[in-house]
Length: 295
Image 1 (cartoon, helix red, strand yellow):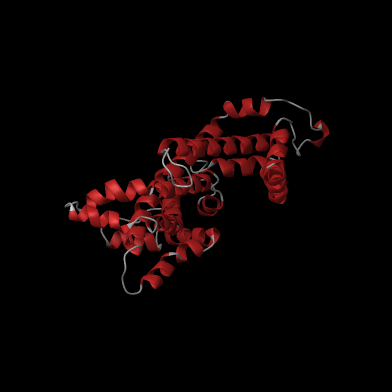
Image 2 (tube, rainbow, N blue to C red):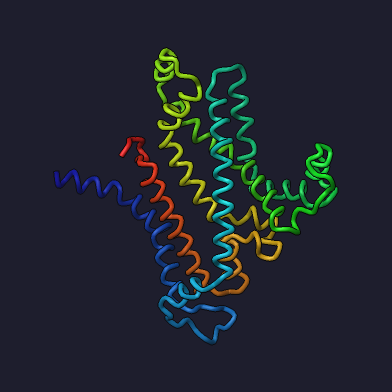
């Protein structure tokens, strides 16, 4: 038994070493950096150890809390829409019909487009009063006159959320489709024999058995949502003012514009702690393991 255990450790040692090199070591270094005052604008100060001072500054920084609120709003809104629309698309793609392969491939096209390209596309549609979005909405009588989307906080979020939902919903649908294909069709047949309608089957069969896929989707999309940067950087730059600035963009500004490496590292550690905590809450709240069994 000991020789088998030793062999097992030897076999996994390369993978453990790679994980330690590319994940654990950078995280540890970031934590260590966050405990120092490291400002490249004032190199003569050196790199003194300041303990938790950077974290105390974050706790009292209103711009950080505003950025955290923006990130939470973006994450909750986009994930909610993506789950609803993604479930509808997954249910549609799970049915047998002619051309299903082509439809599945076509739905994935937005996900394959680079985020910066997608952001530029949506900025082009919403940027000016004569843009495509204004023309369509005015013709449809939804708007009485064209508006400038990026000068008001409320309207600036519209293209940001739409761009993220348009690009990422295919990914969500793909994950949910994988979960749907693992559900035994005999369960639906038995429910139909007992007189259950489609809505009952969705609530009592489909969604409960999709919990593992939903869990994976929530974890992936929450991690993506809390580190969103490129989409908002290209679309709004965090504006107007800082009203659409997420924590990732705030961290970028602290690190690479203000050159506050200690403070920026502390922000990175806080983002990691928040996303890790949310992942654990999802696992506890949904009561499933990633392998699929109920707790």
